[in-house]
Image (tube, rainbow, N blue to C red; front, side):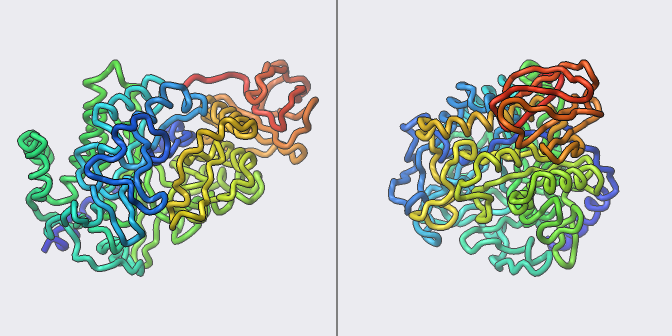
Length: 550
């Protein structure tokens, strides 16, 4: 019964969404530098919260909690670490309360990664408190940095001795996904040790008894019930599982001004659910801004970037244009609330030449059905075993390719310090989730690498044309290109230039007599007969006429 109701609603919402024109995404987000971290592996700012809930230090290697927390992130924000990198937004893996016990199906593993939810309304005590989350968001906002929460809609955490199963009315029947078609990707369980939420249902369900008991112990049951009454009365949604989760997720926006969501496992949930999540998040952010006019950064809309596994700019994986192909159905997630999708293509093409990458990406993002939309490029990830240069043999050159590529970019924590991405003692993806290597900053070569990332990041942040503009090759030797974006300062970049004195052409981009600055060396020069000459120690030039504040 619930599947028929869900199908009818999906048709109605889907028709409305497909008919709606997609507005171009704000150039800020098309150029943004997003820093992604697993808080547990980043920085331990408070050792008193390392093992709450009876958790123990008895996990398999790198499969338990290592101590990183919100306080550690706050400390780095306040120290200017992210500002120095030119970071526009911080994306943290989920910090909501996760299962308390461990799972033995993949060695002895605790929920250090944050992707095994237990209570969507609470901060996990291993990461800190709700007060600290609010402090982190305020600290980031005071420095012009946005905060993206990582959200999960389609599953809870594994069942353990400490973590009972959710009611059957909330869950799918346990049939494993076979990935063959739409149903085999969406209306099924994506992993044997997860319990999938019945997101296709429109039938009302009661609150899970374990949440009722938990909230009663914590003294907030009546408050949570009142808030749910208000939500369902306002929206008219049935009390189906996905609407509870949408309410709980958007509460973080309404209460603290979260700027956006990074959405997990997008293709495993009906697209209509994401459209509803975006609608409610937009409303929540508007309400927060109205109540906190002195705290808001600007009037930008809520931002949503999704993980559609295998989506790629150059049709990497099962995509046709921008639509995901389930074999029997194609879904364009940009039509359902997403401003941007993670680009799984970049890590696969990062070994190509600069011009191959830059020209093909610029063409796709300016002249195809992706025009005006957002993509998020990355080199490394917490769960992509095909991350580029996991051996950290091309740290400087790969940084240059990523940070100068068209599209928004994601720095995976430690990319800028060559954090090891291979640890042979670790099992599976734990090898890519090593602890942040802060001690390596004692090494001159790591400080030099960090400085390279910082210069590229600050240049990118100051000039939206880098990621959101159109690419034009100006010369092959030295390789020189321009990026232009209407209403913004153009830039010219030259790579592999000789150390010392260097002359490059900027003809057609900058007029004679204009003073330019090289944002890599900090030196200035004037355009003469369509060229500029500088004497610097660097092997690249990052040229623009004017620094633009955020």
